[in-house]
Image 1 (cartoon, rainbow, N blue to C red):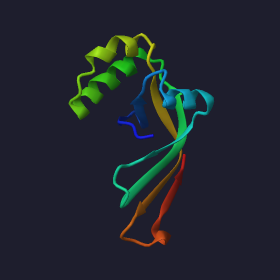
Image 2 (image 1 turned 60 degrees about the vertical axis):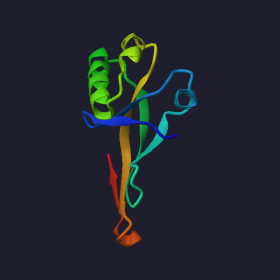
Image 3 (image 1 turned 90 degrees about the vertical axis):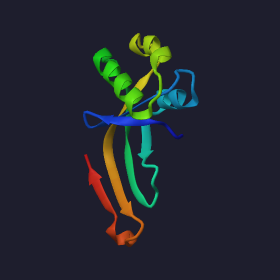
Image 4 (image 1 turned 45 degrees about the vertical axis):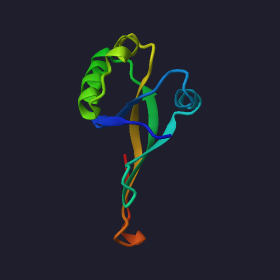
Amino acid sequence: MVVWGLWLNGEFLFSTGRPSRKARNLAENQRCVVCTEKASEAVILEGLAQEVADVALRREFLALYQHKYAWDMSSFEEDILSLKEPIYAVRSMVAFGLDERKSLNAATRWRF
């Protein structure tokens, strides 16, 4: 599923509504994949999405997210800061990089 998110402290953070399919899927299985939107210069990250409980980190996420996307997050702030709505941090396990202009033999894999 497509999500908007941002990198913070070496992790990819994103939000979703608690009743959403994404949140329900992650409650069952924390494994997920994050990809860049530019498929011709792909970066694919495999990892575990864990809910962020740190309120200070959630506050920082809200400010950065609002700035990055020019999206007013004030209507979500209370529920996010009170932990009613989830923020997830994806902790990398494996990442792949591939430039379409090069051969598949030029693909790179990193393990964390």
